[in-house]
Length: 244
Ligand code: PGA
Image 1 (cartoon, rainbow, N blue to C red):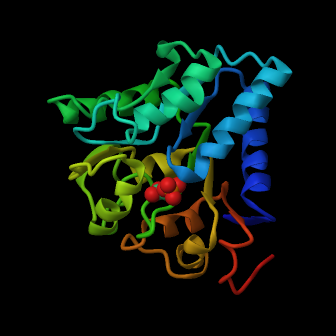
Image 2 (cartoon, helix red, strand yellow; image 1 turned 135 degrees about the vertical axis):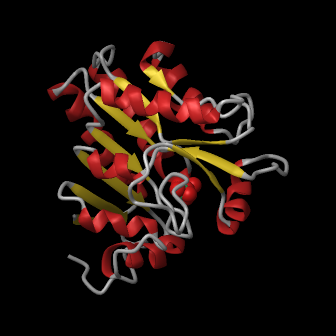
């Protein structure tokens, strides 16, 4: 794992958008897994601009959504579906067949998990996985205590996630479970970028980078990834002992 520190959220997001651009240029048929949330929103917006400016052909790219709130419909502005539609699919007119998101309204969520696992496997695995970090150290909905060996699964959401997660919704949402790629997917991804910005993430960034690797703090798994990068802004790096 390597740590990279940027001056601010914009510079960080620009570097991540450039990573996606160069992935598509070197491997047009790449598999990209993206998280939704406040952290990667600017990355998505900058990527859209760059694709348009450079007229980059993304027609071979496969895009996978990291997770989704169970029982929250795609029309809800707090859903991950809504995020991807708004930030990427509509602005870039990406055909539906290129984008694979969990159907969290399905009454067969277990099948949804196996469908996603098979899709990733059949496409040769994830080339680039871009994730955020929750205030409890979760990645996607891999909550504290999760097995590092899980592929896609459905999970009861942690108290912190239930509380913090309300920030995405206009009115109070009934949240209970999440459906998510697993940390085995992260370990098997050819490259992983974990992004964090802002002072409120400084504590969890320190635990991710400088404390023990443990499933009670899932993001610490980043330390074990040979091609893993923790990319943060100065504020999120402010509590690190080693800043280089
Ligand atoms: P955020 O979410 O980017 O909205 O802070 C991160 C997460 O919970 O994974």
